[in-house]
Image 1 (cartoon, rainbow, N blue to C red):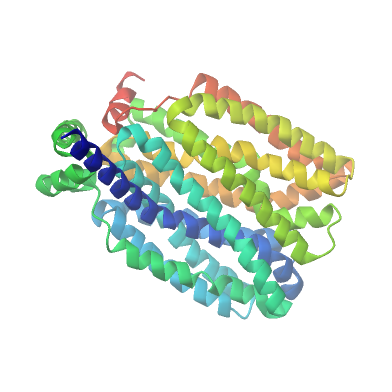
Image 2: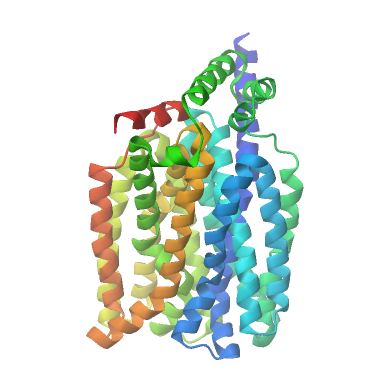
Length: 458
């Protein structure tokens, strides 16, 4: 009897893992798509004669499309369900990938990057929300961080593929093959999505309680499923689900937490510099473009290892301690990175400090916002609230990608080196640590319904 119970528990765990893995492929495409531009912009800059401002827009254009994705995603997630929203995202990603690869001008290139970015934006709402709603609360952190791990793996694979393509094809066409290569994963993603069941919380919102119960039984087993469904029903009855609820006193505070998570996710350093790593290596004396791209991939490999460590730590240590530690760590590393660039140091120290920047981002600053933005809000308004906070996150991502080259130019004019841009990140990291200490809630081992009710006291 005990062996049967253990076997069933393992089977349910494997099932939930498979669901989370499939949804996380959206994160892989997110990382792959946005990382490709870091490898390609060296060639785009030369081919289309881009200045700093135009290069910034080209690098950020997909993120601009991602800003619009959550607006559409919030409505689609409520109307069609989380998994069907990801199917729509896959179609947009496919169209964006092929048309970007065929673009004959920088205007057309940016236009189709924006279209693909809408698909990434849809995934950034639907994928983490689906994982969060399907995961048992005791392993929600681990499975939620899987989305960030998928982003990092996609970001790691993209420059490796780019390196191979640069070695095979001439510079004038290698970047086209980079963007076309996304189609392999997009087709696989779309096929897998048709196998996913709807989220039980979405089903319950639609009054389809029997279907919700069947999904919950596959996830939790018979005993826990009935209690989980009862708690979901009670939470739904307490909520109105309209946009007006987002501006109620407690939910306003939850939104503020979501906005700050989104801001610190990007302005603590790595997200801003991530699209320009090969250029930073060139500034530090790396002469060959292929070597710069290969080192770019190595930095993301280091982050992938840190993200795996985060999956192990997140449900043991908790969200707040990991965030505070990572913020303080990143403050020290960005200060050291600024010093290395200010002193015009070349060679391995540059690679070392940039790789070290991946450690705190991989541990907490990169993944926790995606996880917690889907944890914070009550069930009936989750899609709307996540759409709002994710839209803000993409606005911040766009601003980072657009402004980072300008910050580097400003720093060079002001102090004679790029170091000032990294010291600005140091100040933001200290603010991030203060946020974690004073404001950030702990959501470890709590049900989504318990977290949603907790805002009534704020």
